[in-house]
Amino acid sequence: MTRKIAFLFILLFSINMVFTQESTASKNISSFTCDAPQLNCAKKIWLYLPKGYGISKKKYPVIYMHDGQNLFDSKTSYVGEWNIDEKLDSLNAQVIVVGIEHGNEKRIDELTPYKNDKYGGGKGENYLEFIVKTLKPKIDSTYKTKPNKMNTAIMGSSLGGLISYYALLKYPNIFGKAGVFSPAFWINPEIFELTKNTKILDSKMYFLCGDKESNDMVPDVNKMEILVSDIRCSCRHLTRKKIVKGGQHNEKLWRDNFVTVFKWLKI
Image 1 (tube, rainbow, N blue to C red):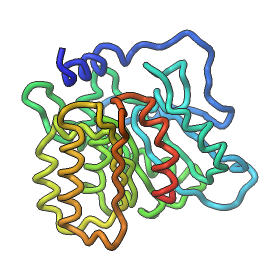
Image 2 (cartoon, rainbow, N blue to C red):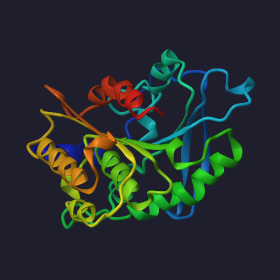
Image 3 (cartoon, helix red, strand yellow):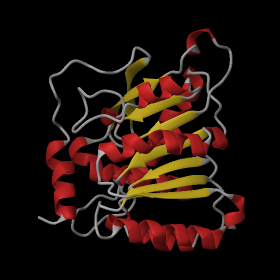
Image 4 (cartoon, rainbow, N blue to C red):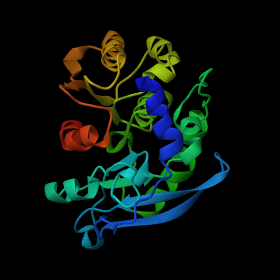
Protein backbone atom coordinates (compact mmCIF):
# COMPACT_ATOMS: atom_id res chain seq x y z
CA MET A 1 0.00 0.00 0.00
CA THR A 2 1.46 3.38 -0.96
CA ARG A 3 1.84 6.10 1.63
CA LYS A 4 -0.81 8.25 -0.02
CA ILE A 5 -3.34 5.44 -0.14
CA ALA A 6 -2.58 4.54 3.47
CA PHE A 7 -2.98 8.20 4.42
CA LEU A 8 -6.40 8.42 2.78
CA PHE A 9 -7.45 5.07 4.19
CA ILE A 10 -6.85 6.42 7.67
CA LEU A 11 -8.70 9.65 6.89
CA LEU A 12 -11.76 8.05 5.34
CA PHE A 13 -12.24 4.90 7.39
CA SER A 14 -10.67 5.46 10.77
CA ILE A 15 -11.39 9.01 11.90
CA ASN A 16 -14.76 8.03 13.36
CA MET A 17 -13.16 5.84 16.02
CA VAL A 18 -13.61 7.07 19.58
CA PHE A 19 -11.68 5.51 22.44
CA THR A 20 -13.42 4.55 25.65
CA GLN A 21 -10.94 6.02 28.15
CA GLU A 22 -11.82 9.00 30.29
CA SER A 23 -11.52 12.51 28.92
CA THR A 24 -8.11 14.15 29.18
CA ALA A 25 -9.36 17.65 28.34
CA SER A 26 -8.53 20.40 30.82
CA LYS A 27 -11.23 22.15 32.83
CA ASN A 28 -10.86 25.27 30.69
CA ILE A 29 -12.05 23.37 27.60
CA SER A 30 -15.71 23.75 26.69
CA SER A 31 -17.72 23.00 23.58
CA PHE A 32 -20.82 24.16 21.75
CA THR A 33 -22.63 23.51 18.50
CA CYS A 34 -22.62 26.09 15.73
CA ASP A 35 -24.85 25.99 12.67
CA ALA A 36 -22.83 25.94 9.46
CA PRO A 37 -25.22 26.95 6.67
CA GLN A 38 -22.36 27.06 4.17
CA LEU A 39 -21.85 23.32 4.77
CA ASN A 40 -25.49 22.35 5.37
CA CYS A 41 -24.71 20.96 8.79
CA ALA A 42 -23.95 21.87 12.38
CA LYS A 43 -20.40 21.81 13.71
CA LYS A 44 -19.17 20.95 17.18
CA ILE A 45 -16.71 23.60 18.33
CA TRP A 46 -14.17 23.13 21.11
CA LEU A 47 -13.02 26.25 22.96
CA TYR A 48 -9.86 26.82 24.98
CA LEU A 49 -9.91 29.85 27.26
CA PRO A 50 -6.65 30.89 28.94
CA LYS A 51 -5.98 30.97 32.64
CA GLY A 52 -7.58 33.98 34.27
CA TYR A 53 -9.95 34.65 31.38
CA GLY A 54 -13.01 34.85 33.64
CA ILE A 55 -11.62 37.64 35.80
CA SER A 56 -9.65 39.50 33.16
CA LYS A 57 -10.85 42.60 31.31
CA LYS A 58 -8.30 42.33 28.52
CA LYS A 59 -8.85 40.95 25.04
CA TYR A 60 -7.12 37.96 23.50
CA PRO A 61 -5.79 36.79 20.14
CA VAL A 62 -7.49 33.75 18.62
CA ILE A 63 -6.22 30.63 16.86
CA TYR A 64 -8.64 28.72 14.64
CA MET A 65 -7.63 25.07 14.35
CA HIS A 66 -9.01 22.21 12.26
CA ASP A 67 -9.66 18.62 13.33
CA GLY A 68 -10.92 19.72 16.73
CA GLN A 69 -11.38 16.10 17.83
CA ASN A 70 -7.61 15.67 17.98
CA LEU A 71 -6.56 18.84 19.77
CA PHE A 72 -7.49 18.53 23.45
CA ASP A 73 -8.85 15.12 24.32
CA SER A 74 -7.50 11.60 23.77
CA LYS A 75 -11.05 10.28 24.16
CA THR A 76 -12.20 11.96 20.95
CA SER A 77 -8.95 11.67 19.00
CA TYR A 78 -8.09 8.88 16.60
CA VAL A 79 -4.40 8.19 17.31
CA GLY A 80 -3.56 10.60 20.10
CA GLU A 81 -4.20 14.25 20.87
CA TRP A 82 -2.04 17.34 20.38
CA ASN A 83 -2.24 18.27 24.11
CA ILE A 84 -2.91 21.87 23.10
CA ASP A 85 -4.54 22.76 26.42
CA GLU A 86 -1.74 21.37 28.59
CA LYS A 87 0.94 22.98 26.44
CA LEU A 88 -0.68 26.40 26.48
CA ASP A 89 -1.39 26.15 30.21
CA SER A 90 2.30 25.40 30.86
CA LEU A 91 3.23 28.56 28.95
CA ASN A 92 0.54 30.61 30.66
CA ALA A 93 -0.35 31.56 27.09
CA GLN A 94 -2.85 34.37 26.77
CA VAL A 95 -4.72 33.13 23.73
CA ILE A 96 -8.09 31.65 22.81
CA VAL A 97 -8.15 28.49 20.68
CA VAL A 98 -11.17 27.53 18.60
CA GLY A 99 -11.11 23.88 17.51
CA ILE A 100 -13.44 23.03 14.63
CA GLU A 101 -14.86 19.54 14.28
CA HIS A 102 -13.79 17.81 11.07
CA GLY A 103 -16.48 16.43 8.84
CA ASN A 104 -15.63 12.72 9.26
CA GLU A 105 -16.35 11.22 5.83
CA LYS A 106 -16.66 14.78 4.48
CA ARG A 107 -13.23 15.83 5.75
CA ILE A 108 -11.64 15.76 2.29
CA ASP A 109 -14.54 17.80 0.91
CA GLU A 110 -14.20 20.48 3.56
CA LEU A 111 -10.44 20.83 3.71
CA THR A 112 -9.56 20.92 0.00
CA PRO A 113 -10.05 24.09 -2.07
CA TYR A 114 -10.00 22.18 -5.38
CA LYS A 115 -11.58 18.92 -6.49
CA ASN A 116 -9.12 16.08 -7.00
CA ASP A 117 -9.92 13.80 -9.95
CA LYS A 118 -9.28 10.67 -7.89
CA TYR A 119 -10.26 11.59 -4.35
CA GLY A 120 -12.92 14.25 -4.85
CA GLY A 121 -13.23 17.15 -2.42
CA GLY A 122 -13.19 20.79 -3.41
CA LYS A 123 -15.51 22.46 -0.88
CA GLY A 124 -12.81 24.27 1.03
CA GLU A 125 -14.28 27.61 -0.05
CA ASN A 126 -17.50 26.76 1.78
CA TYR A 127 -15.59 25.65 4.86
CA LEU A 128 -13.57 28.87 5.04
CA GLU A 129 -16.69 30.92 4.42
CA PHE A 130 -18.22 29.20 7.45
CA ILE A 131 -15.24 30.20 9.57
CA VAL A 132 -15.05 33.78 8.30
CA LYS A 133 -18.72 34.66 7.99
CA THR A 134 -20.38 32.55 10.67
CA LEU A 135 -17.97 31.21 13.29
CA LYS A 136 -15.57 34.13 13.68
CA PRO A 137 -18.33 36.73 14.10
CA LYS A 138 -19.90 34.49 16.75
CA ILE A 139 -16.61 34.11 18.59
CA ASP A 140 -15.82 37.82 18.38
CA SER A 141 -19.26 38.84 19.65
CA THR A 142 -19.34 36.30 22.48
CA TYR A 143 -15.78 36.31 23.81
CA LYS A 144 -13.14 38.93 24.59
CA THR A 145 -11.12 38.79 21.38
CA LYS A 146 -8.75 40.95 19.37
CA PRO A 147 -10.46 40.54 15.98
CA ASN A 148 -7.87 42.14 13.69
CA LYS A 149 -5.79 40.01 11.31
CA MET A 150 -2.51 40.11 13.23
CA ASN A 151 -4.31 38.63 16.22
CA THR A 152 -6.14 35.98 14.18
CA ALA A 153 -4.24 32.81 13.32
CA ILE A 154 -5.18 29.56 11.61
CA MET A 155 -3.48 26.18 12.04
CA GLY A 156 -3.81 22.62 10.92
CA SER A 157 -2.03 19.51 9.74
CA SER A 158 -2.16 17.50 6.52
CA LEU A 159 -5.37 18.61 4.77
CA GLY A 160 -5.67 21.10 7.62
CA GLY A 161 -2.26 22.45 6.68
CA LEU A 162 -3.37 22.82 3.08
CA ILE A 163 -6.55 24.73 3.93
CA SER A 164 -4.70 26.90 6.48
CA TYR A 165 -2.24 28.03 3.84
CA TYR A 166 -5.06 28.56 1.34
CA ALA A 167 -6.84 30.72 3.93
CA LEU A 168 -3.92 33.17 3.87
CA LEU A 169 -4.34 33.55 0.11
CA LYS A 170 -8.13 33.67 0.14
CA TYR A 171 -8.64 35.92 3.17
CA PRO A 172 -5.48 38.02 3.62
CA ASN A 173 -7.41 40.63 5.59
CA ILE A 174 -8.74 38.09 8.09
CA PHE A 175 -5.82 35.78 8.89
CA GLY A 176 -2.44 37.28 9.69
CA LYS A 177 -0.64 34.13 10.84
CA ALA A 178 -0.70 30.42 10.00
CA GLY A 179 0.83 27.21 11.27
CA VAL A 180 1.10 24.99 8.18
CA PHE A 181 1.86 21.48 9.44
CA SER A 182 2.62 18.71 6.91
CA PRO A 183 0.49 20.36 4.21
CA ALA A 184 -1.14 17.98 1.72
CA PHE A 185 -0.23 20.13 -1.28
CA TRP A 186 -0.09 16.97 -3.41
CA ILE A 187 -3.87 16.55 -3.45
CA ASN A 188 -4.39 20.10 -4.81
CA PRO A 189 -1.31 21.06 -6.86
CA GLU A 190 -3.29 24.04 -8.17
CA ILE A 191 -2.23 25.78 -4.95
CA PHE A 192 1.22 26.37 -6.46
CA GLU A 193 -0.16 28.27 -9.44
CA LEU A 194 -2.43 30.28 -7.15
CA THR A 195 0.59 31.26 -5.09
CA LYS A 196 2.48 32.34 -8.22
CA ASN A 197 -0.39 34.66 -9.12
CA THR A 198 -0.62 36.19 -5.66
CA LYS A 199 0.78 39.73 -5.64
CA ILE A 200 0.55 40.55 -1.94
CA LEU A 201 1.19 38.04 0.83
CA ASP A 202 2.06 39.71 4.11
CA SER A 203 0.92 37.11 6.64
CA LYS A 204 3.36 35.20 8.84
CA MET A 205 3.59 31.48 8.15
CA TYR A 206 5.46 28.56 9.61
CA PHE A 207 5.92 25.47 7.41
CA LEU A 208 6.61 22.28 9.34
CA CYS A 209 7.02 18.72 8.11
CA GLY A 210 9.02 15.55 8.67
CA ASP A 211 11.45 13.94 6.27
CA LYS A 212 9.81 10.52 6.68
CA GLU A 213 6.26 11.46 5.69
CA SER A 214 6.10 10.82 1.94
CA ASN A 215 8.31 11.19 -1.10
CA ASP A 216 6.77 14.53 -2.08
CA MET A 217 6.25 16.22 1.31
CA VAL A 218 9.64 17.88 1.68
CA PRO A 219 9.98 18.82 -2.03
CA ASP A 220 6.48 20.36 -1.98
CA VAL A 221 7.17 22.39 1.17
CA ASN A 222 10.50 23.57 -0.24
CA LYS A 223 8.82 24.51 -3.52
CA MET A 224 6.15 26.51 -1.73
CA GLU A 225 8.69 28.31 0.41
CA ILE A 226 10.56 29.37 -2.74
CA LEU A 227 7.37 30.64 -4.36
CA VAL A 228 6.50 32.65 -1.27
CA SER A 229 10.03 34.08 -1.20
CA ASP A 230 9.56 35.23 -4.79
CA ILE A 231 6.57 37.30 -3.70
CA ARG A 232 8.16 39.03 -0.72
CA CYS A 233 11.61 39.80 0.56
CA SER A 234 13.04 37.30 3.04
CA CYS A 235 14.35 40.31 4.96
CA ARG A 236 10.85 40.73 6.39
CA HIS A 237 11.24 37.46 8.32
CA LEU A 238 7.63 36.45 7.78
CA THR A 239 8.32 32.82 6.85
CA ARG A 240 9.92 30.01 8.79
CA LYS A 241 10.42 26.40 7.75
CA LYS A 242 11.39 23.38 9.81
CA ILE A 243 11.97 19.88 8.46
CA VAL A 244 12.12 17.40 11.33
CA LYS A 245 14.60 14.59 10.88
CA GLY A 246 12.79 11.27 11.23
CA GLY A 247 9.44 13.05 11.51
CA GLN A 248 6.44 11.02 10.34
CA HIS A 249 2.91 12.02 9.32
CA ASN A 250 1.29 11.77 12.73
CA GLU A 251 0.08 13.58 15.83
CA LYS A 252 3.41 13.11 17.56
CA LEU A 253 5.19 15.27 14.99
CA TRP A 254 2.59 18.03 15.26
CA ARG A 255 2.23 17.79 19.04
CA ASP A 256 5.98 17.90 19.65
CA ASN A 257 6.45 20.99 17.48
CA PHE A 258 3.32 22.97 18.31
CA VAL A 259 4.98 25.12 20.97
CA THR A 260 7.89 25.99 18.66
CA VAL A 261 5.46 27.16 15.98
CA PHE A 262 3.26 29.02 18.47
CA LYS A 263 6.20 30.92 19.96
CA TRP A 264 7.66 31.92 16.60
CA LEU A 265 4.33 33.20 15.31
CA LYS A 266 4.02 35.27 18.51
CA ILE A 267 0.29 34.79 18.78
